[in-house]
Amino acid sequence: MPTPADRTAARSAIRDEATRLRTLFEATGAQVVDPPVLQPADTLLDLYGEDIRARAYVTSDALRGEQMLRPDFTVPVVQMHMAHGAEPARYTYAGEVFRRQESFPDRANEYFQTGYEVFDRTDPAAADAEVFAEIRAALGDLPLRAAMGDIGILTAAVDGLQTTPARKAALRRHIWRPRRFRALLDRYAGRVPVPETRSALLASADPLADCAPVIGLRDRDEIAARIARLRDDAAAPPISENDVALLDAILSVRETLPFALEHLRDISVDLPAIAPAVDRLEARARALSARGIDIETLEFEASYGRTSMEYYDGFVFGFYAEGRSDLPPVATGGRYDALTRVLGQGAEIPAVGGVIRPGLLLELRAAR
Amino acid sequence: MTIKLGVPSKGRLMEKTFEWFAARGITLSRSASEREYAGAVDGIGNVELVLLSAGEIPRELAAGRLHLGVTGTDLVREKLSQWDQQVQELAELGFGHADLIIAVPAAWVDVDTLDDLDAAAAAFRARHGFRLRIATKYHRLVRDFLRHAGVADYALVDSQGATEGTVKFETAEAVADITSTGETLRANHLKLLQDGLILRSQATLFRSRAAEMNEADRATLAQLCQMIGVD
Image (cartoon, rainbow over all chains, first blue to last red):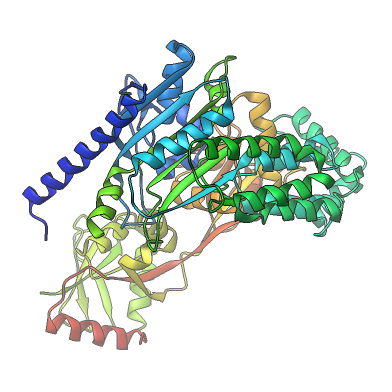
């Protein structure tokens, strides 16, 4: 059993490591920032929805209402940059984040993160490569497996489907929820039967004719509008098997970066809409190479990052300890242009960043 | 030491529990004073009856202050994280049936499934600028269920009672609540979603995995299990 003194020493060591990593990033020119631990809950709830309550601690007082113990630094850093920041900007921070772990009692619910965030519109591919390379360098010589993906390719693929804008919007909305995404795709492709209630609704000339009293905020017009959308949808031809196969082909791409690129190029012959996103991936690969990263052995997985928090919308990456699938990733990051748009109230800036968990880093070093 | 058995302190749940044990040779009775939350146990020795609110029984079982407790499956699953690590189901008692369900206004002729609810929530948020609100007191169960189903753009609002009235009162657009017959739903112009059944609940006898026991207690528990027909 660790004594209180052991625990204090371990915590100090993690804090020192977090600060050491921040100093590394500071030395590359990043500005140190220190957002508050308590964050207004409404911003985070608006971004993530109800799911954030299962992951973050919520507290409240009668004056300020609901507050959250910060579950990450990205949101407050983006808010701070959008309110005061000059461009381009690089930020670094070190501190604790708090996550509820009700389903995983062995995982830490309070741990340190050191982060590096880049707000720069000049060359997104170079910024992606910069964050990846700086994080990798800060991790030292530990044997780590890098994983990466690109949500932008999935979004582009959805946009390139031969189907209605409404269906594309519905699929885009669920890129981060693979089960619901698959269910929608099956339905739009006519692979599953239409529920009886839906058929009955569509067969009825005036479904609202003798319905129950309309109660609540969602009014008759909204119900009628959705029925109209359902009629439009029923009239639209199913998404072709060919398109579904292309989407599946993209989702199953998992190979080293050069092969993945080649594979995606082949697919883009049949689905030209993804070509610009594949160009961006290629530019990123070149930028990574220019930074001395060996892209020949780098794994690319198109589905990577689909189940994470839904603000990443382009490049996504993570570093994992070899042979330690029991541990969460030592570092993660990605591009979140859309988040700056949501929090910028009209303004936006391409942004990419990543975080390291110093506690895990120390644990892995000690285990060597 | 004694084996502590927790039973809901009020109403039909208490009476039915007493009847269930009586039918198995164990007589539970409340002390003569109606105000005192203690009771007597006949038919088996070394067992102490504790009367308390059904909502507190899960917590007391998890803390090991009760060895056995009768409460609803819904309450155990809502209040205990990884409930099956903390308590064990010994017997379903066959009463106190209630389903935790999601219901929407019956006038929503376009919404019959979770898939519809998700689509309606997206449109609602775009139109009203806030997420579609679901009133409930079962936050964890409902959130887990909806996350698993991939429903987005909703928010849970707390309602500790008269939940079916929240839609008409415009503090919520849908509800997630316990229903035993569905009559309250109909009376409030609400309907069930076809795939909106979150949990079937009934009164259940649970055993704490945390409560300490000595030799005599283990023998008592074995005897009790034999009397109620649990292996």
